View 1 (spheres, rainbow, N blue to C red):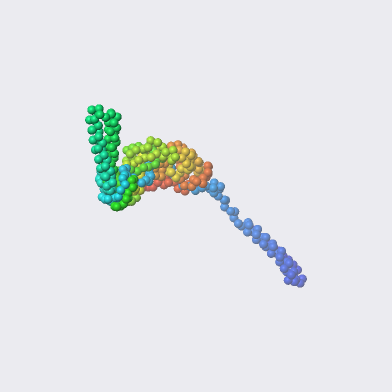
View 2 (tube, rainbow, N blue to C red):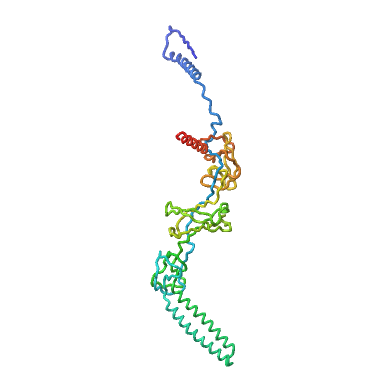
Length: 388
């Protein structure tokens, strides 16, 4: 673009500085306008803005729904307990005269563990036995007199009744004397001692705690959906934090026949054979039950599932758009879950970024886990073939 500005004035006339300024101002305005017009014409048109579709697309990561094997597992933490454990008490009052075992000692059934002073009980026993002998003699004499009809029959009946009562009292006194010796009710280990020698005990005071370490158990509260597939005899793998990476094996012993209405769980009892004494009651254990194997299940990543049980949804990618799809899931294992309804193998579902999606939203797939895995597998197979 070109332009020209012609200015003429009479040079013969005298000019003052103010008159020159008056003449130059219009010239300056004209030059500025011309330069602005030139600049506007020389600027190239701006590039077209991005289309609304590319501008509004939301970045997501996806994976494919596949068909394969699934082993349903139930994992939980629990504490090992002794199947046979007891708190031993002193059934008779008295002073502790003798302690024969300590904490950690192995004992067998019937072994004497401690002895309580039984002097008073023995004296009561002797008194009862003496009185019993007297009544026995009275019964024998009464039988002779009754045969000669020298006493009434009811008098003899009373004597025999008193003799029977006194005999029972003697038996009870003998039990009290015997209870002064505290004995083990089964084979096991003393886990705690509550008493000291010379201590005065009242009736029912605690004396020892003991347990049988050879037979341990664990109780699991399993959701009813998983519990229906758990049965007695199934194998249970478990580990104990205190023993590092070592793994153990146990068996499901029994499954409760009812569902707890408050928690919706079923109590499953696991029996642990601990005859080698490698475990102890109270240890924290991590249980894992593989209770069901599915050979040909429709599987999808757990991360793709939104909502709660009974109202689950997933976002499926079709033609660059996300569509909300209602689904129903079944058993799960690790990072995958079984799809019962709503999706078929091959569908592409969103695993990252779905929380901000709406029905029909435009998406940009940044990464597809399944396709990447397939490509890596093919590349590896090709490399091995060429190397062979």
